[in-house]
Length: 487
Image (cartoon, rainbow, N blue to C red; front, top):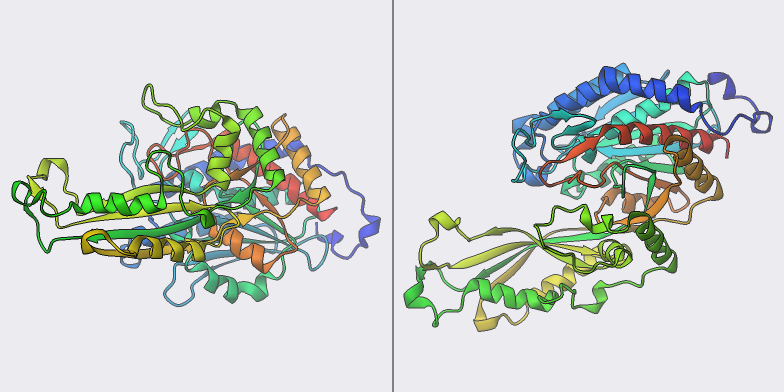
């Protein structure tokens, strides 16, 4: 591979695509021999993100996960590559790998993933659990395998396919962080610290996104922003007998409902402040329509609805736009409300609700957070003690237009390794790093994809990694990196 480094670019005219059969054989063997066994061990480590484990340093789970994944990576480094576990101050660590390129001196690809996990969540099926790895057929169940522990394995395996086939590729940096599920609050410090080593990437590959099905390559074109905070409402210093206080003292829960109505129409779920909306680009509307044609009712039927429950609309295109370009509120936690078994006839002194507000990709998340706080805290009913405690604001992201070479690479990679064309679609979640990179490297191209498809249920119960999907995605990444070198 190194012989290409000093050749004039015009003298090298390789085949565009990798040898798909050889790649499949190599990827299958790597996954069977080491990737899946290591992921099984990784799932067993409860390395929750710092937001969900304030004592992560003392518990040591994050360090165990870093040691495990870095250990695998050291055994599978391409020739000349280096790996460092970077630690800045007392922040969560980062795995940083540099792979020297064999083409286009000065060109860089940045590949990204994370190894921290969401908390346990309830409702796992019998025999399954967040820290209990279970392999059922081609699916590996447990927290973090798909979101997104597989990323470091896919990244290095893809590069090693090119090494094995003698294909040229640009210098690659692999960055695996440990704070993504907490909003990546540690990452800006690492981006600054590593900036001289990262350089200016012309391509960013992110493996932390979703897919509409497991039958083709899915390319993420946008990500919503996220506004987090806790609404605290208190009217009493202590609880009182409900027979004595009700009708005299307003319920803290009712006041919370009243305040939430300022933000969300309780009948329709529509967010009320118009400044929390954004104009949807025509291209994104067209992409949503195409994705709806591909998926049909699977846009909504993939969710574990109770029997007889319907989605908010049955128009697949509108549902895609709802979850990718429109604001939406979820209440994800509560304090001050006892479990039913311990709930006496008491008017509770306070109610606290954790709010998760998704905002459109192009809405300023920090501004949205300030707007929500002002809206909820102003003029509380009955003079109630109301406080909105901000929990963070993650910027959304809207992808730049695809360069012709990347459009062709994605089309051919999906056709080669899946037998179907790729589909472009926005995602409803947030990947804070993409917003950071979009601002820092406005000329870069982005290939954002992932394995979180129907039923995979990241953050919820029964999360799983679809192993065939991960393998095909790895081959697609190899193909895109190869095409990048000859663009």
